[in-house]
Image (cartoon, rainbow, N blue to C red; front, side, top):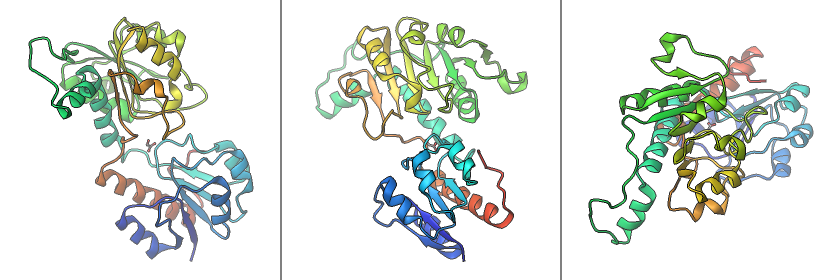
Length: 317
Ligand code: GLV
């Protein structure tokens, strides 16, 4: 029987399936393993079912035992894993695309709504019973008729576009390549980031974190936005330069932000906490029972496919 290390606690039905298939090392206390502990725990294992909270950098990967042949990441993103280091050691890395598109797009829309309609301030006032209705109380930005700029028109970007369109938003996007017109469904393509940002009353960051996208939203690019734009990020914190975004909020260049992801999670730049106009969530993108179950099942399918055939369709390195 193959031996698998599972670095984080999963939902019960997924752990039951793993127990049927493998000699499995589960993490019932859901302890966050240090890199050293992860290396020790993987001794004698054939593969690791990892999570986005595991920092599998080059140093860690180089110290994994030779028996490890696969890192099946329980996430669509794989910025936590050094793909080249894994490749050099002949370890395949897989992810869990598609199954989390809907849940993540829902949170993407929540970020847009929460930031535009001043939900943080409203919640705070309501909980403190500190409000009175008046014609100009907590006036926000209406989505209908507003331009939404989508940075990264992959699966999640497309789903956000679809929902936002039904809310009356006008969709613009920037992507490595233009979509075919049937897939665009009326969305307007911008070859250059600057051109997209200049029409983004609301920006939705949906692209993966990569060498090309790290700090793409920075001091210089934020200036391309219309004054009073709203910036939301459902993808990865690494894409945004926090100091620049907080400064733009301070200067009212940016009206509000909606964030689900942060550099250095679970910590976030304290500058965001001071802002009433920051609608912030703790990385909830894929957090529904259906989606987390499907993600873990796909991560297990990836292990199964690889251990049986030596290959896997969700290989990313
Ligand atoms: C969630 O953020 C994921 O990458 O799956």
